[in-house]
Amino acid sequence: MTRLFQKSGWLSVLLVWVVSISGCVTSRQPAVVPVERPPAITENLKESSWWQIRFAFKWPENTAPAWHLDLMVAHSVVAPVLEKQREAIALWRFHRRAVRDAAGHQFSFILFTTANTAGDLFKSIEMAPEIVGLQASGRLERLSMGRAGDRQGRHIEDTSDSRWSEELQKSWPWFIMGVSRMWLTLTDEQAKKLAFQAGAAPLRARIDFYEALNKKVSRVWEREGAHALLHHLNAIFGYEPLIIREERAIRF
Image (cartoon, rainbow, N blue to C red; front, side, top):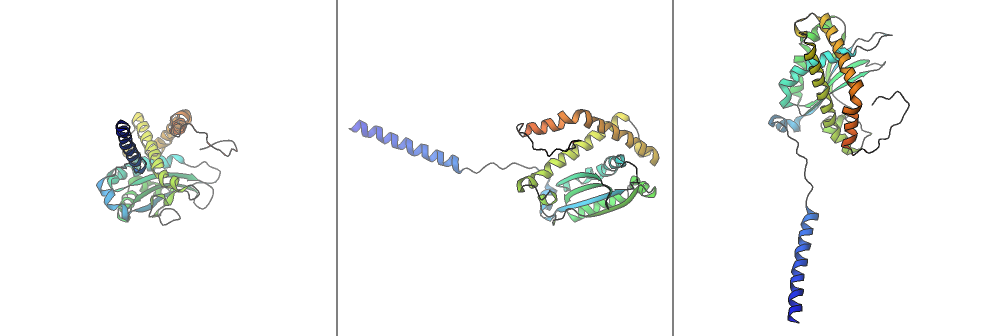
């Protein structure tokens, strides 16, 4: 009887220990994904909002958009000022579009930062020799800056598509910044191979250079994008199938 009691006592202690451990496991808070930001970003994050610097290019009827001008502005104008201010910008991305409407062919640099930082970038951009030259030649019709998106722009998700789920809206800006950085780096790597001193050349020669460069970057997308980008993006999501509303001539 004593031995049975001793065994039962040890079993009770063991049971209490197991329950307490399992309680700790189930009540543990999920780990927070660390997002490293430079000190300046952390300090200014509450004062940050979304800003959009727009470059509206001339697009004559019956012609294709001058997509290479997007490349020229991104690589030779935006990239240098972005590098100088990168510790004050939490998120950024590029947006390219060309539709026969009021906006037409417009390239945008969209950033989440303070009003002062956005204003400083805009001043540097509008004084860049390339911008002055494009405006003087009539190729750049409008250069403007304003708040981005239809919402207030005070939150990271405010320029995401409002039709998306809330969690996707909050996470998507990190994805598209990575894509924009990759596109800019790919452009820079291709430019190094061409070994052309664009900054010292006349405007017409620089435009021709970026037209050739744009073709090379587009060729990388055409030949390698399916595996390097779409396949590996699918892999991140565990190769789950994707619903596509298909009308053919697919562009993602």
